[in-house]
Image (tube, one colour):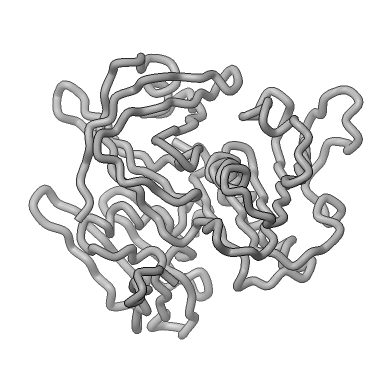
Length: 94
Length: 231
């Protein structure tokens, strides 16, 4: 595997096109090895033909995102779950 | 939903022979946290577009510091050809993980490799502006004195922000530390801290591993990598 990768911080912009909440700050669990950590810490390869985010523990693919002119394809089958931080009722983010 | 906004260049500042800071006017900019970045889009006359992510260098306004990569698609334009009055498209702010919040009182350790100083400088500037007591320490690895950005701010002694410049190849005359890679000595004394590490991928891996070796809690180490070229 090449060392030529970015990290999940680079997913923040492309994912912000789809979601109203910042998914790069979410904590995800790898469906393959169970490692839990922020989406921002994933190893990201791309950008062409799409962004591929791999688990920093086992290197399995956790997320794939391909953008065409009129659609976004998001594959999360390698992610068991996401804990997405939301603004609390007091209006402060955690 | 995030959208592309028109950004007009209003001011440029050379940081060193190959990097410059660009200050943009972005109508409707919602503000941002230090550490966040923007995506920049350039569109050629034939419709071809190129996108890059750049960290915001200042806690206020839209300031980007761009390192020129000679065979890059975007950075030569930004560092050599774009002039005040010219426009580009950008969207942001994005990235809510690699950020420092002034309300958090925990000591902060910033570790920068080369151009990785940019988002950390936004944190230092925010720390100075916020009038808080949070201890800040910056360990900045850079190849040579010519690579330094923000020289007037980083060379000025400031009791609130301890700065260690770690030259890896050549140091200025009289510099106490001899040139070489970061070592444990650059980080002593050990103080538990929220750590922010930014730089090229290889640097970030090595620096984060060193911090863990020194006893830092991996859960408190946040990292941001850019590609080997940065463009």
